Amino acid sequence: MAINPTGLVAVINININIEEENIMLCSIGKIEEKQLDEIRSLEEELGKTILAFQCGGETKPAALDEKQLQRIRDLEEKLHLTLVAVEY
Image (tube, rainbow, N blue to C red):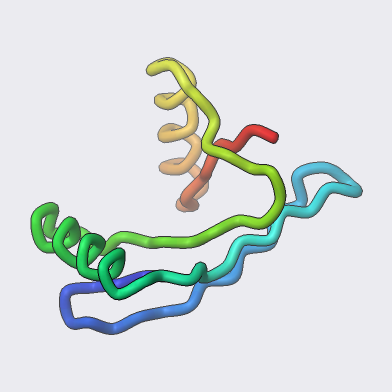
């Protein structure tokens, strides 16, 4: 979900084909009003729009070192996409 300072909310559905038979589905998660307030506060502080989404399954953010993180950033820039590294 994207929340911007104007208060608009956009729904995001992301289907990622990790392997031929392993699909991860990400979509808008249940966000309580307090959580929404915290996200809006952080957006205001950073001056940036924040995307909040939730993925099904046993996924968690991957632990990356600086070199790995930079490789992802470089590919994001090249492909004009946002990439998320996860672990199962």
